[in-house]
Length: 415
Image (tube, rainbow, N blue to C red):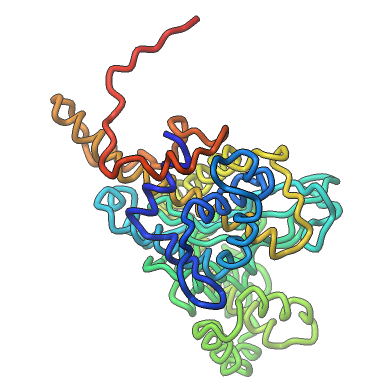
């Protein structure tokens, strides 16, 4: 299966290319091959010039004009939403989840140059400049949101961006992150916005529980308790907390922008202190649930593993230029991240449409294939997909519409 053919088939099924509208006229792109080639150039990190050299029937001028006229952050988001919603409607997707839980994590990409987002030095990734693609993945394996962030920054402010502004039909109520996405502010804001925040805490034994009463009132628990909750600060600034949550809910301000501004004036800002105290209360409730519920711990690990599968596929796709993102500007870096995410979503959707055929074939042969076992399968596979080589767009567009046959009884020879 060629990636060119896969993109055409997914577009026929979902119509995601129609979401790329002309900035001036609002019309969809008439040159479908050029549009898909421009998306593939972003996702594979090949670039427009090299994509034109590797493509048949598409010139560099066509790619540049198409990218300038049709590809923008909002059109990428709208196209991604069409694929995610289409995959969410497939019956097999319900085996992996109901589209109600998600996870998010950052993936580091090295930069060929030092730019606006690429950090100089950070403790985790060394001295090479680079940045992270911070991605939200649903329990059905669909990557429904992506952002470019500095590799040296804290991931927690960006958790709510993907939950509130993804533009899909997913109804997320529970979200998993690892330690990098945790802060007391995110704990309380998720709770007030209607999300259950479930992080996997690496430093769990070092974190203290919070209490409203003086810690001395609980002598048996004293080693586990931190300082007392400042209830007076919460009461005094509760109205401001409610207004902040309403602003985030309506989209008047991006959560990451507000959280970073509050953190910049932590000592002077009493609203930041009130959020922190409320977050300590919410974190205490979560830590008690985590200790008492093995099922919660298993669900969190399973959710984060789906994000790791997505990272492995991203590394397989974004291979050109040794996987280094050479673009300096933040907008160009966003295009690279969005193109990569859309390609992953297209592969997940295509695999999800053909896995039922394989299941039906196995059951027709008399094999027992239970839904309980199918819940542990994944549509994030790419061994059967050719991701590089010459891109024959005209041949891919001319492939007849219809279902492909399964690869059965293939003979493998070892030299």
